[in-house]
Length: 150
Image (tube, rainbow, N blue to C red):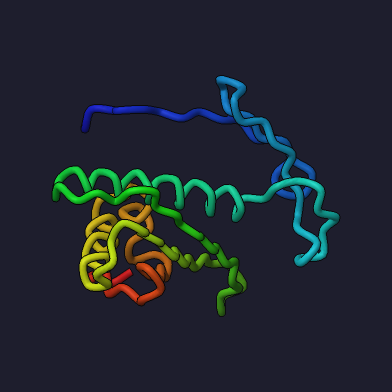
């Protein structure tokens, strides 16, 4: 087994309808609610929002790793993430993700795309979801071919 670099621990009660989630260290403490768009009352966060924030933050970290490895200044990257909840044919649910990455310090569109594609290979969220969900990437407004089946 691989050496664990970090382990996050959390407890959730009540699920997404009227739940509560809290990390064991108490830093994250959220009310979970079904969004109004899905017929709920809103008034809290939901798993898709948490996933969107987590994936974007993780991806930004992966950009930093790639930048250091390739000796490229990725600068003040911004990642706009969108997580969609989709129904499946077998009455289940699936996710789809869009990550729109802006790298202001990198003006060459091809270079920006290479860095984003490389970050997609490094990011733990990308590695965990690869082959399971559709992930669309853009770099400075241009679509990125990640080179792997998402």
